[in-house]
Image (cartoon, rainbow, N blue to C red; front, side, top):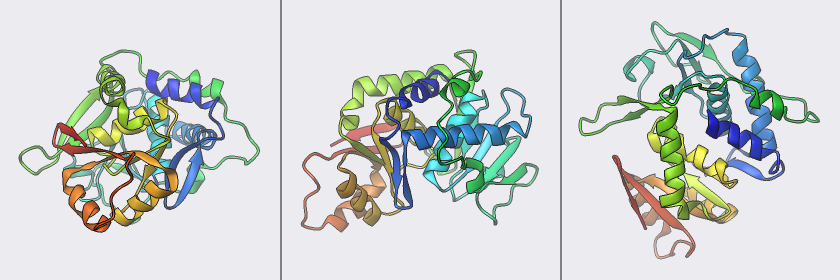
Length: 269
């Protein structure tokens, strides 16, 4: 995928800058690309044919992003499940299901347990940018890169395929139309990887060299906002009320911009 290769290329000039932050840790751009390289090597052992779909359920956002980027560089479409449903309820059955959980069941799907060793590299090693940039990626604009999910009007998850052309249009178009929320040093995403927004935000943020923060709760979100100087917050409308309730009489930072997601619609404040 061209967007991921662009991120890999530009990471050479941002190696020591933070790329992903969450309450469990921080990864620089250099560390993220090294994790991508390690994930590529781990995936090679499965000898997956181009176009083979792989489903992810990785709770560590650094691991999830690295695996998503690694799959895209190898020309393997990916999907991310939410915690509320398992693989067989998510719209399609992939060939491989990678999870860091011990209690996930996926009938009819090969399930493999992922741990920190999948992303480990020598501390002194440099990212192999040339090797990652030489990977095949996706060859055609209509190649499916990601499967994402939307509850729509029924409340049941529905699977939507995003092609290479669609993703690039959404990311590059989003930078042009809604790029204001990425102009600060950091952005905070509270949408799951299984959603359209949750899939495109990492591509958008890391294309622009900002640090992308994640939080598991409203309280953690406020901590990340204050710690990293978050300028843009992406969340669902349902998450707005508890966020403002926790603020109480304290106003949010004046530089903070909100992007609230309502189904397929986006509203900004």
